[in-house]
Length: 562
Image (cartoon, rainbow, N blue to C red; front, side, top):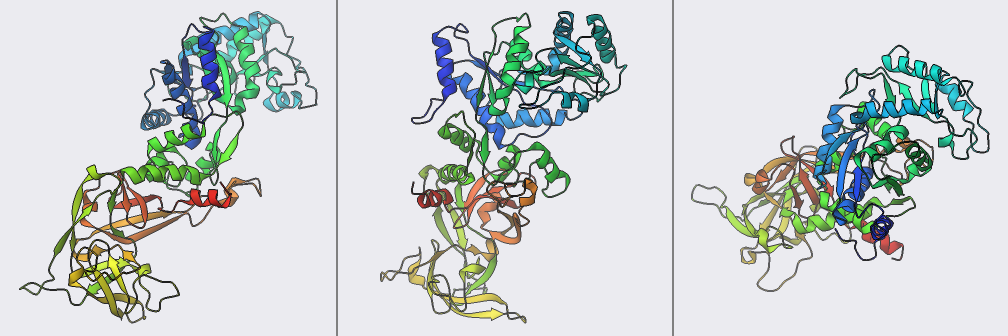
């Protein structure tokens, strides 16, 4: 993928400079290192795309390495889902590794640190250690175990590994500088005791390396040249470098580079809060179409190509910012406009009877067929045949018995065009005992087949429709923002306070044209006048509205004078 004109990518500039200086002999290797403790979300997409596209741009290698150093939260289920998500985005890792592949080597390196007086076992509790670290402008306090004899630390560390100590009874800390301005260098924890069952190593280990001890060393073992991370790891980089400085590296020293996270308005990407939404039943699961997980976006019908395009167009920055979700939706809409076939569906059906429609010899309404274009943006998609008869359904909102000002759709005495078919004029209505309109009667003009009048008269509205006898039932899921606030939690500090209780509306009585019965699971089609809808892969007849037809991003830019 070439860098688009106008898009910044300082990481590419760094790699180009390294190649020019032969820093890594022209070699480029990156990695995407997720922790398998949940499902990937839209924020991870930027990191995936950055890692893989950087490698691809220079003919390099990009691996996936699972940071599986916490047995209490990690599952094989998440490993499999993460690989699926990466492949859905369009990437195939050159290799799949695990931090647990290196547990023995990491342990031996840690033992070497203790031997050299660069690490010690601390038997204080976690709260005390945290308090002793101090804070910004507040000096740290050295642990009373900091200068314990090397042999003593080695003996306790061996007992930790053997499973003889309870969780929290001891930890291994690096001996760096308790007064350093960077809090991560104030004798950070390298190993802690965990008795949970690990998804790969099972019960072989009872001590596990922290991220900071495992990450840089795993990069070095694998031969990573450019370790790309989001900005929150900027303060970790001195510790990343310190750890690498202490070790006999098997090859080139990797270089950590940080870039801005991908964040959007109206979206929360905290795994802890997303998990709470699932556990509390606020959403139906991690793949709920309202969720910002990649599986949720896939289910909703987002094309992976649109996510890649968005990440490419915004470039790569050094400063975090929050993007309008409407900007991503605009790209989704733009791509679907080119690829999605058109279909007619009526979400809130109202029966329309053409009282002058002809019948056959058996007294049954005649059935006509119209040839309509599948996608005006792509002639190669061809045409389809749609049945038309004297009993139809239209959207309930497309009729008003007493029309308000500037209402151009159907009302008594008003003529409208039925998309690709005929001009019709409403005459009267049928109501139930509650006074609710259940049927609109109308007449059609036989001379207007195809939707145009031979005398040149004009109508101000074209409406979609479905032939009742040829319809297929469907359920439409309409979505609003899962969070009402642009920045969830900005007012109260808790994003879940801004949950939208009306984020989904299910319309179970919808009807669609017969061709919708042939829609493939996961396929996105445009319901004319209504938006783009993805057919659910698991629930028969369920369609998720991906995005509407209205370009909200264009309206926002116009208001902002862009």
